Image (tube, rainbow, N blue to C red; front, side):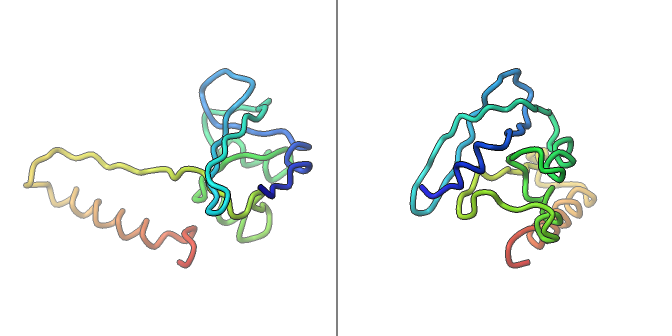
Length: 127
């Protein structure tokens, strides 16, 4: 596993979550190396990923952030991916509707809009 271990260990880790724990387990996947779980100390915790953005931009540590929150900063070179080739589990978006076949037109329009919008999301590679 080729991870910039010294650099990663030299920076504090920032975590999003509601648990009051001093360590967090981050799970990664790599096509060649498989699945890896790493227990990291997290002195800074937040229950909202947006809160960590100023800390990341200031270079205060490493964090697992959803791509849709940081894609502009990655594109502009303000942030960089610390572990290229490694990925974290994907976040799913579920829109729950009643099982009725006769769905109000506004709900169908919303479903179509979201499907189109997220399939063409600017943060998705190749869009």
